[in-house]
Picture (tube, rainbow, N blue to C red):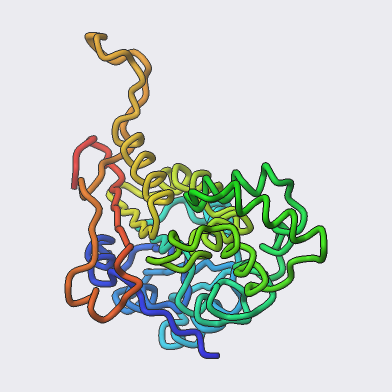
Length: 317
């Protein structure tokens, strides 16, 4: 299956990055290289783009798509949580822009063999790096009921988390749960019929398991602050999120980096010494316009937030 992924908010990202032709940029989730190809197209001279992804199939597709720009593009197989450390090892001291397009790609969802989708019968995997960490099947078959409940409740915001966790534990006593459709049947049995009308009963549970086995929220929380710190003056950080859990982390981190002071509100002046690292370019999340929504259904939940590193004089560029 060809790795095809329609990049969301493409024009908004390119505008948001404010690309300098000879700048250094990072795409932490290159996927099919839709955003990266547009970034690379705008670089020249000393301009360079570092593309990270933990999915080998994504990197293979990106390499093919970025062939025309190979002299200015470096592809690296790694989770973006390691990007800053890797770039420092390569001698970079800062970058002019970073992009994170979070979540699962169209290819990963549509390729049933990867186990991301509840619409295809496949081994219960869901790992973005198929060689790393626990699969969704490992979690489903080994996690204690309380842990399963926490995952489904916190990462999937599933109101029937308790019933589903209990049903999973009971089912696996008889035999291991190996496929997506086996899990579908268990989830469906745990949710009242009248509550299955609007959406697929497995949607929230599959999201939760995917987040858990890829450590998505943990990685995001650990990565944002170091990435802001690695931006050059005036550098831009664009993050596209697809569900409220991600967006909440991005929004709170950006605001905290803009207003880091922890002094009580009644203090006449700041004594904590924490200085702003920059500012939020957009006060509200940027969302897709009507034209894009008509063409790309997966753009409906996309939210883009942009942070700019402050300049040496403390002002906005």
